[in-house]
Amino acid sequence: MTLLEVITKAVANHELPGSQSEHPIILNPDNIFLNLKPELEGAGAASLVNPVSGWQISEVDTYLIDSGKKFHAKLKRKLKDTNNFDKVEFIGILNPYLEKIGEKVGISTRINRSDSGYTQGLIEKVGFLMGRDVASLVLEACISLRIWELVETLIVHGLVDHSSYSNLVMRLATEKRSDLLCLCVKYSSDLGSSELLCILKYFLCPPKDAYGSMGSVRMEWESQALLAIEKASDENLSRKKLCLAKEASILLMVAHDGFSVSELCLHYLLASSNIDEVILSSSISKLNGKELMGLIRYLGKWLKKFERFPQAGPCPEASFGLGLKACDWVPKLEVIVQCLGLVLDENFSSLVLLPKFQEELRSIEGVVSTLASEARYCCSLANVVKRFGS
Image 1 (cartoon, rainbow, N blue to C red):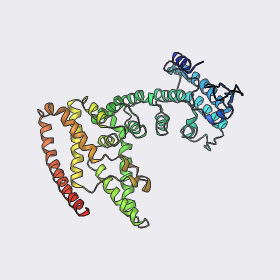
Image 2 (image 1 turned 60 degrees about the vertical axis):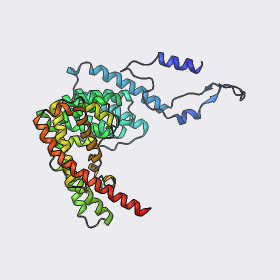
Image 3 (image 1 turned 180 degrees about the vertical axis):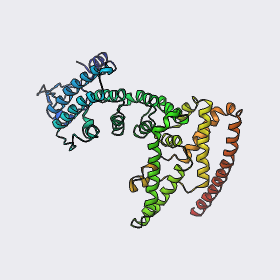
Image 4 (image 1 turned 135 degrees about the vertical axis):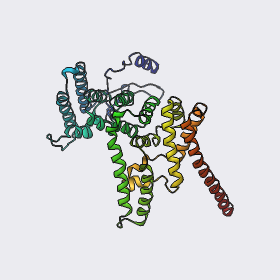
Protein backbone atom coordinates (compact mmCIF):
# COMPACT_ATOMS: atom_id res chain seq x y z
CA MET A 1 0.00 0.00 0.00
CA THR A 2 1.42 3.37 -0.99
CA LEU A 3 1.68 6.32 1.40
CA LEU A 4 -1.11 8.09 -0.49
CA GLU A 5 -3.37 5.05 -0.08
CA VAL A 6 -2.62 4.93 3.65
CA ILE A 7 -3.55 8.61 4.07
CA THR A 8 -6.70 8.22 1.93
CA LYS A 9 -7.83 5.20 3.97
CA ALA A 10 -7.19 7.01 7.27
CA VAL A 11 -9.25 10.01 6.18
CA ALA A 12 -12.09 7.78 4.98
CA ASN A 13 -12.16 5.86 8.26
CA HIS A 14 -11.83 8.92 10.50
CA GLU A 15 -13.94 8.33 13.59
CA LEU A 16 -17.04 10.38 14.21
CA PRO A 17 -16.92 13.03 16.99
CA GLY A 18 -17.63 11.45 20.35
CA SER A 19 -16.61 7.94 19.28
CA GLN A 20 -13.89 6.00 21.07
CA SER A 21 -10.64 6.06 19.10
CA GLU A 22 -8.69 2.85 18.45
CA HIS A 23 -5.66 4.01 20.45
CA PRO A 24 -7.07 6.44 23.06
CA ILE A 25 -3.81 6.73 25.00
CA ILE A 26 -0.40 8.06 24.00
CA LEU A 27 1.75 5.06 23.14
CA ASN A 28 5.42 4.90 24.04
CA PRO A 29 7.12 4.12 20.69
CA ASP A 30 10.52 3.16 22.11
CA ASN A 31 9.70 -0.48 22.88
CA ILE A 32 7.65 -0.83 19.69
CA PHE A 33 10.45 0.40 17.41
CA LEU A 34 12.96 -1.99 19.00
CA ASN A 35 10.86 -4.96 17.85
CA LEU A 36 10.44 -3.81 14.26
CA LYS A 37 12.34 -5.85 11.68
CA PRO A 38 12.53 -5.52 7.88
CA GLU A 39 10.49 -8.16 6.06
CA LEU A 40 13.01 -8.28 3.20
CA GLU A 41 16.34 -8.98 4.88
CA GLY A 42 18.32 -8.90 1.62
CA ALA A 43 16.82 -5.70 0.23
CA GLY A 44 19.46 -3.34 -0.99
CA ALA A 45 19.78 0.40 -0.63
CA ALA A 46 18.09 0.78 -4.03
CA SER A 47 14.75 -0.20 -2.49
CA LEU A 48 12.88 2.94 -1.49
CA VAL A 49 10.29 1.09 0.60
CA ASN A 50 11.10 -1.87 2.81
CA PRO A 51 8.07 -3.16 4.81
CA VAL A 52 8.63 -3.98 8.47
CA SER A 53 7.06 -6.55 10.76
CA GLY A 54 6.89 -6.99 14.51
CA TRP A 55 4.43 -4.19 15.30
CA GLN A 56 3.04 -5.00 18.72
CA ILE A 57 1.65 -2.86 21.49
CA SER A 58 2.99 -3.66 24.95
CA GLU A 59 0.89 -5.66 27.41
CA VAL A 60 0.47 -2.66 29.73
CA ASP A 61 -0.66 -0.36 26.91
CA THR A 62 -3.04 -3.04 25.65
CA TYR A 63 -4.55 -3.33 29.12
CA LEU A 64 -4.94 0.46 29.45
CA ILE A 65 -6.65 0.65 26.06
CA ASP A 66 -9.02 -2.27 26.69
CA SER A 67 -9.95 -1.22 30.23
CA GLY A 68 -10.46 2.36 29.05
CA LYS A 69 -12.80 1.23 26.28
CA LYS A 70 -14.84 -0.91 28.67
CA PHE A 71 -15.09 1.88 31.25
CA HIS A 72 -15.99 4.42 28.54
CA ALA A 73 -18.80 2.20 27.22
CA LYS A 74 -20.16 1.56 30.72
CA LEU A 75 -20.07 5.21 31.79
CA LYS A 76 -21.61 6.38 28.52
CA ARG A 77 -24.48 3.94 29.01
CA LYS A 78 -25.00 5.17 32.58
CA LEU A 79 -25.04 8.83 31.54
CA LYS A 80 -27.97 8.24 29.20
CA ASP A 81 -30.23 8.08 32.25
CA THR A 82 -28.93 10.53 34.86
CA ASN A 83 -32.19 10.25 36.81
CA ASN A 84 -31.09 6.78 37.90
CA PHE A 85 -27.37 7.54 38.07
CA ASP A 86 -26.01 9.47 41.04
CA LYS A 87 -22.70 10.56 42.53
CA VAL A 88 -22.32 7.47 44.72
CA GLU A 89 -22.72 5.07 41.79
CA PHE A 90 -20.37 7.14 39.62
CA ILE A 91 -17.63 7.15 42.27
CA GLY A 92 -18.30 3.43 42.74
CA ILE A 93 -17.22 2.67 39.16
CA LEU A 94 -14.59 5.42 38.79
CA ASN A 95 -12.47 4.48 41.81
CA PRO A 96 -11.97 0.79 40.87
CA TYR A 97 -11.07 1.77 37.31
CA LEU A 98 -8.42 4.25 38.49
CA GLU A 99 -7.11 1.80 41.11
CA LYS A 100 -6.67 -0.99 38.56
CA ILE A 101 -4.85 1.06 35.94
CA GLY A 102 -2.60 2.46 38.66
CA GLU A 103 -1.76 -1.06 39.88
CA LYS A 104 -1.11 -2.27 36.33
CA VAL A 105 1.44 0.49 35.72
CA GLY A 106 2.93 0.08 39.18
CA ILE A 107 1.93 3.43 40.68
CA SER A 108 1.25 3.37 44.41
CA THR A 109 -1.24 6.07 45.37
CA ARG A 110 -0.67 5.69 49.14
CA ILE A 111 -4.06 7.23 49.86
CA ASN A 112 -6.44 5.97 52.52
CA ARG A 113 -9.73 4.84 50.98
CA SER A 114 -11.61 6.40 53.89
CA ASP A 115 -10.26 9.90 53.11
CA SER A 116 -12.84 12.35 51.80
CA GLY A 117 -10.48 13.33 48.98
CA TYR A 118 -9.69 9.76 47.92
CA THR A 119 -11.08 10.08 44.38
CA GLN A 120 -9.35 13.44 43.90
CA GLY A 121 -6.08 11.85 45.00
CA LEU A 122 -6.53 8.99 42.54
CA ILE A 123 -7.09 11.44 39.68
CA GLU A 124 -4.01 13.42 40.70
CA LYS A 125 -1.84 10.28 40.78
CA VAL A 126 -3.08 8.18 37.84
CA GLY A 127 -5.50 10.44 35.94
CA PHE A 128 -2.93 10.95 33.18
CA LEU A 129 -3.33 7.26 32.30
CA MET A 130 -6.93 7.83 31.25
CA GLY A 131 -7.30 8.27 27.51
CA ARG A 132 -8.57 11.54 26.09
CA ASP A 133 -12.01 10.04 25.46
CA VAL A 134 -12.31 8.63 28.97
CA ALA A 135 -11.16 11.88 30.61
CA SER A 136 -13.67 13.90 28.57
CA LEU A 137 -16.51 11.56 29.57
CA VAL A 138 -15.46 11.66 33.24
CA LEU A 139 -15.54 15.47 33.03
CA GLU A 140 -19.01 15.33 31.48
CA ALA A 141 -20.21 13.07 34.29
CA CYS A 142 -18.73 15.36 36.97
CA ILE A 143 -20.50 18.37 35.46
CA SER A 144 -23.82 16.55 35.06
CA LEU A 145 -23.68 15.28 38.67
CA ARG A 146 -22.28 18.63 39.94
CA ILE A 147 -19.19 17.08 41.54
CA TRP A 148 -17.27 20.36 41.43
CA GLU A 149 -14.27 19.21 43.47
CA LEU A 150 -13.48 16.62 40.78
CA VAL A 151 -14.00 19.20 38.01
CA GLU A 152 -11.42 21.37 39.79
CA THR A 153 -8.95 18.46 39.99
CA LEU A 154 -9.35 17.68 36.28
CA ILE A 155 -8.73 21.33 35.34
CA VAL A 156 -5.75 21.87 37.64
CA HIS A 157 -3.98 18.69 36.50
CA GLY A 158 -4.40 19.42 32.79
CA LEU A 159 -6.82 16.55 32.14
CA VAL A 160 -9.38 18.66 30.25
CA ASP A 161 -8.99 18.28 26.51
CA HIS A 162 -9.04 21.42 24.35
CA SER A 163 -12.25 20.27 22.65
CA SER A 164 -14.03 20.05 26.04
CA TYR A 165 -13.37 23.62 27.17
CA SER A 166 -16.15 25.22 25.13
CA ASN A 167 -18.88 23.17 26.80
CA LEU A 168 -17.13 23.37 30.19
CA VAL A 169 -16.97 27.18 30.22
CA MET A 170 -20.62 27.53 29.16
CA ARG A 171 -21.78 25.09 31.83
CA LEU A 172 -19.69 26.73 34.57
CA ALA A 173 -21.10 30.15 33.67
CA THR A 174 -24.64 28.72 33.78
CA GLU A 175 -23.95 27.09 37.15
CA LYS A 176 -22.38 30.35 38.49
CA ARG A 177 -19.07 28.62 39.30
CA SER A 178 -16.89 31.73 39.22
CA ASP A 179 -13.97 30.07 41.00
CA LEU A 180 -13.75 27.29 38.42
CA LEU A 181 -13.94 29.79 35.55
CA CYS A 182 -10.84 31.45 37.01
CA LEU A 183 -9.11 28.06 37.07
CA CYS A 184 -9.97 27.54 33.39
CA VAL A 185 -8.15 30.78 32.59
CA LYS A 186 -5.19 29.91 34.80
CA TYR A 187 -4.62 26.33 33.66
CA SER A 188 -5.60 26.34 29.98
CA SER A 189 -3.19 27.89 27.51
CA ASP A 190 -5.43 27.55 24.46
CA LEU A 191 -8.90 28.84 25.30
CA GLY A 192 -10.83 29.87 22.20
CA SER A 193 -12.20 33.34 21.52
CA SER A 194 -15.79 32.27 22.28
CA GLU A 195 -14.79 30.89 25.70
CA LEU A 196 -12.78 34.02 26.54
CA LEU A 197 -15.68 36.28 25.49
CA CYS A 198 -18.06 34.29 27.70
CA ILE A 199 -15.72 34.63 30.70
CA LEU A 200 -15.14 38.35 30.04
CA LYS A 201 -18.88 39.12 29.85
CA TYR A 202 -19.52 36.99 32.94
CA PHE A 203 -17.04 38.86 35.16
CA LEU A 204 -17.92 42.31 33.81
CA CYS A 205 -21.59 41.85 34.71
CA PRO A 206 -21.83 38.83 37.01
CA PRO A 207 -25.25 37.51 38.04
CA LYS A 208 -26.31 38.41 41.58
CA ASP A 209 -26.01 34.83 42.80
CA ALA A 210 -22.52 34.41 41.29
CA TYR A 211 -20.66 36.20 44.08
CA GLY A 212 -20.86 33.28 46.50
CA SER A 213 -18.34 31.24 44.49
CA MET A 214 -16.02 34.26 44.12
CA GLY A 215 -15.18 34.33 47.82
CA SER A 216 -12.32 31.87 47.40
CA VAL A 217 -10.78 34.13 44.73
CA ARG A 218 -10.61 37.12 47.09
CA MET A 219 -9.25 34.89 49.86
CA GLU A 220 -6.50 33.69 47.52
CA TRP A 221 -5.45 37.26 46.67
CA GLU A 222 -5.57 38.27 50.35
CA SER A 223 -3.49 35.28 51.47
CA GLN A 224 -0.88 36.00 48.80
CA ALA A 225 -0.70 39.68 49.79
CA LEU A 226 -0.30 38.75 53.48
CA LEU A 227 2.36 36.18 52.60
CA ALA A 228 4.26 38.86 50.66
CA ILE A 229 4.16 41.20 53.69
CA GLU A 230 5.34 38.34 55.91
CA LYS A 231 8.23 37.61 53.56
CA ALA A 232 9.16 41.29 53.37
CA SER A 233 9.59 41.39 57.16
CA ASP A 234 11.46 38.09 57.45
CA GLU A 235 14.98 38.93 58.60
CA ASN A 236 16.18 35.41 57.83
CA LEU A 237 15.88 36.02 54.10
CA SER A 238 18.80 37.25 52.06
CA ARG A 239 18.93 40.92 51.10
CA LYS A 240 18.07 40.08 47.51
CA LYS A 241 14.97 38.10 48.52
CA LEU A 242 13.91 40.81 50.97
CA CYS A 243 14.01 43.41 48.19
CA LEU A 244 12.06 41.05 45.94
CA ALA A 245 9.48 40.46 48.68
CA LYS A 246 9.01 44.21 49.16
CA GLU A 247 8.48 44.70 45.42
CA ALA A 248 6.00 41.82 45.36
CA SER A 249 4.11 43.16 48.40
CA ILE A 250 3.63 46.52 46.67
CA LEU A 251 2.48 44.84 43.46
CA LEU A 252 -0.01 42.57 45.24
CA MET A 253 -1.29 45.43 47.40
CA VAL A 254 -1.95 47.45 44.25
CA ALA A 255 -3.71 44.48 42.61
CA HIS A 256 -5.91 43.76 45.63
CA ASP A 257 -6.95 47.07 47.21
CA GLY A 258 -9.88 48.92 45.69
CA PHE A 259 -10.97 46.18 43.30
CA SER A 260 -14.27 44.34 43.61
CA VAL A 261 -14.17 40.55 43.77
CA SER A 262 -15.37 40.24 40.15
CA GLU A 263 -12.58 42.63 39.09
CA LEU A 264 -10.06 40.42 40.91
CA CYS A 265 -11.30 37.61 38.66
CA LEU A 266 -10.73 39.87 35.63
CA HIS A 267 -7.06 40.14 36.63
CA TYR A 268 -6.57 36.51 35.59
CA LEU A 269 -8.08 37.12 32.19
CA LEU A 270 -5.99 40.17 31.28
CA ALA A 271 -2.80 38.54 32.60
CA SER A 272 -3.45 35.31 30.70
CA SER A 273 -1.30 34.09 27.82
CA ASN A 274 -4.58 33.37 25.99
CA ILE A 275 -5.10 37.09 25.43
CA ASP A 276 -3.67 38.92 22.45
CA GLU A 277 -4.66 42.05 20.50
CA VAL A 278 -6.78 40.14 17.97
CA ILE A 279 -8.79 38.29 20.61
CA LEU A 280 -9.15 41.44 22.74
CA SER A 281 -10.41 43.46 19.78
CA SER A 282 -12.87 40.73 18.78
CA SER A 283 -14.19 40.33 22.34
CA ILE A 284 -14.54 44.06 23.01
CA SER A 285 -16.55 44.54 19.81
CA LYS A 286 -19.17 42.10 21.16
CA LEU A 287 -19.71 43.82 24.54
CA ASN A 288 -22.87 45.78 25.28
CA GLY A 289 -22.96 49.28 26.79
CA LYS A 290 -23.12 48.16 30.42
CA GLU A 291 -20.25 45.73 29.96
CA LEU A 292 -18.13 48.36 28.20
CA MET A 293 -18.65 50.81 31.04
CA GLY A 294 -17.63 48.12 33.53
CA LEU A 295 -14.46 47.43 31.54
CA ILE A 296 -13.58 51.14 31.23
CA ARG A 297 -14.10 51.62 34.96
CA TYR A 298 -11.85 48.62 35.67
CA LEU A 299 -9.11 49.84 33.33
CA GLY A 300 -9.38 53.34 34.80
CA LYS A 301 -8.73 51.94 38.27
CA TRP A 302 -5.56 50.30 37.00
CA LEU A 303 -4.28 53.52 35.40
CA LYS A 304 -4.83 55.40 38.65
CA LYS A 305 -3.00 52.67 40.54
CA PHE A 306 -0.01 52.79 38.21
CA GLU A 307 0.07 56.59 38.48
CA ARG A 308 0.03 56.45 42.27
CA PHE A 309 2.47 53.54 42.58
CA PRO A 310 4.90 53.76 39.65
CA GLN A 311 7.23 51.36 41.46
CA ALA A 312 4.68 48.53 41.09
CA GLY A 313 6.16 46.45 38.28
CA PRO A 314 6.18 42.78 37.25
CA CYS A 315 7.84 40.38 39.72
CA PRO A 316 8.13 37.03 37.94
CA GLU A 317 11.01 35.95 40.21
CA ALA A 318 8.74 36.22 43.28
CA SER A 319 6.48 33.51 41.90
CA PHE A 320 8.99 30.64 42.02
CA GLY A 321 11.49 32.24 44.43
CA LEU A 322 9.06 33.14 47.22
CA GLY A 323 5.94 31.13 46.37
CA LEU A 324 3.97 34.28 45.48
CA LYS A 325 2.10 32.79 42.50
CA ALA A 326 -0.35 35.70 42.33
CA CYS A 327 2.45 37.90 40.97
CA ASP A 328 2.05 36.04 37.67
CA TRP A 329 -1.58 37.14 37.48
CA VAL A 330 -1.23 40.89 37.83
CA PRO A 331 -1.97 42.55 34.45
CA LYS A 332 0.89 44.60 33.00
CA LEU A 333 0.56 48.32 32.26
CA GLU A 334 1.02 47.78 28.52
CA VAL A 335 -1.90 45.31 28.44
CA ILE A 336 -4.12 47.76 30.32
CA VAL A 337 -3.24 50.62 27.95
CA GLN A 338 -3.67 48.38 24.90
CA CYS A 339 -7.08 47.21 26.10
CA LEU A 340 -8.25 50.77 26.82
CA GLY A 341 -7.07 51.89 23.39
CA LEU A 342 -9.07 49.09 21.74
CA VAL A 343 -12.18 50.02 23.72
CA LEU A 344 -11.96 53.64 22.63
CA ASP A 345 -11.11 52.81 19.01
CA GLU A 346 -14.01 50.40 18.67
CA ASN A 347 -16.74 52.26 20.57
CA PHE A 348 -15.84 55.94 21.05
CA SER A 349 -18.60 57.34 18.82
CA SER A 350 -21.33 55.47 20.70
CA LEU A 351 -19.86 55.85 24.19
CA VAL A 352 -19.28 59.59 23.95
CA LEU A 353 -23.04 60.15 24.15
CA LEU A 354 -23.24 58.55 27.61
CA PRO A 355 -22.82 60.98 30.56
CA LYS A 356 -21.18 58.29 32.73
CA PHE A 357 -18.61 57.63 30.03
CA GLN A 358 -17.75 61.32 29.79
CA GLU A 359 -17.09 61.39 33.55
CA GLU A 360 -14.87 58.32 33.36
CA LEU A 361 -13.04 59.71 30.34
CA ARG A 362 -12.28 63.03 32.07
CA SER A 363 -10.99 61.10 35.10
CA ILE A 364 -8.78 58.86 32.93
CA GLU A 365 -7.57 61.80 30.83
CA GLY A 366 -5.78 63.37 33.79
CA VAL A 367 -4.06 60.11 34.63
CA VAL A 368 -2.99 59.48 31.04
CA SER A 369 -1.58 63.00 30.74
CA THR A 370 0.53 62.47 33.85
CA LEU A 371 1.78 59.08 32.65
CA ALA A 372 2.54 60.51 29.21
CA SER A 373 4.59 63.38 30.65
CA GLU A 374 6.52 60.93 32.85
CA ALA A 375 7.16 58.74 29.80
CA ARG A 376 8.51 61.73 27.85
CA TYR A 377 10.72 62.62 30.80
CA CYS A 378 12.02 59.04 30.99
CA CYS A 379 12.66 59.05 27.23
CA SER A 380 14.69 62.23 27.61
CA LEU A 381 16.79 60.65 30.34
CA ALA A 382 17.23 57.56 28.19
CA ASN A 383 18.55 59.73 25.37
CA VAL A 384 20.99 61.45 27.76
CA VAL A 385 22.26 58.10 29.02
CA LYS A 386 22.60 56.88 25.44
CA ARG A 387 24.63 60.01 24.53
CA PHE A 388 26.96 59.53 27.49
CA GLY A 389 27.35 55.86 26.60
CA SER A 390 28.40 56.67 23.06
